[in-house]
Amino acid sequence: MEQNKKKHYEDEFKKRIVCLHLEEGRTLKSLAEEYNISHGSVSNWIKTYREECQVNPQSKDEYDLMSENRKLRKQLEEAKKENEFLKKAAAFFAKEID
Image 1: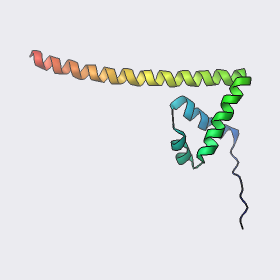
Image 2 (image 1 turned 90 degrees about the vertical axis):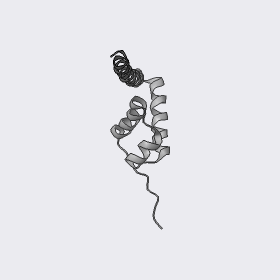
Image 3 (image 1 turned 180 degrees about the horizontal axis):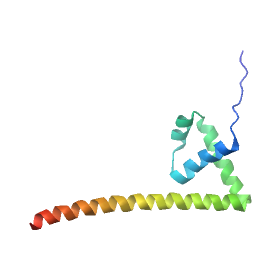
């Protein structure tokens, strides 16, 4: 019978996974599948990081920065979509005028 060995992950790896989730909005499922780790592990790492943010000002600052980055990325993506739409609308109306 095989012993059930727990896989050990380096703190830097865990932090990278947490950053991908918090900063880039990656889902727990996609991270678990891509990095071949359990959904529960990813969830626990995120929970642990959030708890650390409550007591560690440096971690809290990092968390705030990641959240702000995520928000700005979303806003940029929306602005790009709106810009594309406006370009298409301008081209359409320019054709109508001719």
